[in-house]
Amino acid sequence: MTRPIQPQNHPFPFLLYLEWALLAIAIWTELLPNPSLRFPRFPLLTLLSITGFGLMGLRLPTGKLIYKIIYTAFEIVLILFTSLTGSRAIRLFPFLYLLLVTRSCLIFALPGRLLITGLSFTLFLLTLQRRFHRIPAPPSAQERLRFFPLLLAFLFGLVLVFVLLLMNAVLAERQSREKLAIANEQLRKYALRIEDQATLQERSRIAREIHDSLGHSLTALNLQLETALKLWLSDSTRAYTFLKQAKNLGSQALQDVRQSVSALRDPLLGRSLEQAIASLAEDFGRSTGVVPSCQIQLADSITTEVSTAIYRIAQEALTNISRYASATEVKIQLQVTKNYLKLKIADNGKGFQLSQNTTGFGLQSMRDRAQGLGGELNINTAPNSGCTIVAEIPLHT
Image (cartoon, rainbow, N blue to C red; front, side, top):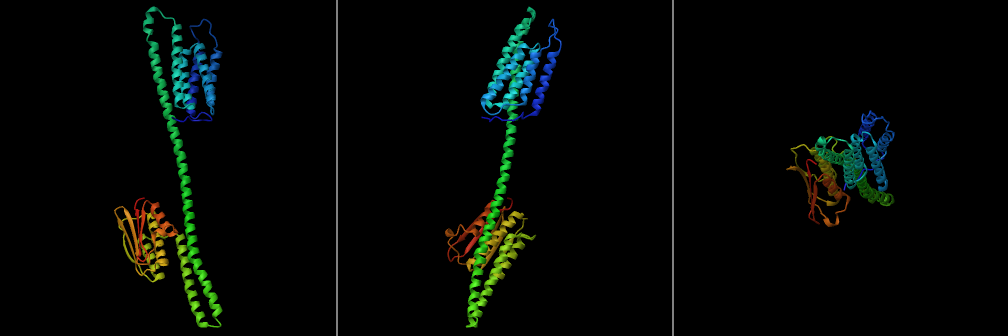
């Protein structure tokens, strides 16, 4: 069932202007001299009824159903009064019924519209029959006029059906546009919310990364320096050993800071994906002493979104390898297979139990990046068996 529109004023101004034009023609028709009347009269009550009917279109009823029923009933009373008292009402009252059906489409739901349309057609037939019975006609013309009311009723019925269907189509199109506008606004809000959540998640991941890596390094560095100070006067050799360890921890902390900062800036920096991955592998080799073997085959152009996601996944994977894997061999494969960009990173490190490490920020971040672009990420690992990460992302998302 179609939900009725609840306008505060007339929702279609052009229909209101059309109503006024028809009613103005009706008033002008009533004011013309009528040769059938011996004494011309000024149809004041008829004109007031027509004017009142027109002004009612300025404010359509809203809220409770009883107000709409009273409004429509008053309209019908004005139409009946005009059609029964106007000197030229036989030319006027069909237009009033059309306006009644048009307004009912703006007020009621579909069952109410059908009811008002049927009632308008019934009242039209009764008024038409009464008017034709009052028209004097010679016996020779009565036979020819017998079928005229039937033809007029048939044509008026077709016009009513056309108006009803037209108004339903206009209202359905208007409601569809309103729903589409609401849906677009909701999508815009959802997009902003998702963007905010992604930003907060990325910040939380980086904060936890800094806390886990840099905090641990600085805590250990502080302990090494305190021990060196205590042993400096009594055992300078051991103090020197602790100072060397403190220097290594400082270098590690500095490397962690650089990695965290690089995660915040544009990863590609105007470079191609192949150049960015190669630079990432070089940085990994300098920090760990293990130079990854790279096999990169990129024949097609890659979008920025896909390139950024692949780079971040590779960066996260190499970071995890440098911290936890204790690997001596790392392989990076990047190639285009059909309509997908496939990244494979394998190491011969310690591995881990996958079922116990599925909620970490690193692994979850990689999955989110792949799935966010319609791809997938698979991890194959076991304790003491190394780890293999495979990410496949569609080239055209």
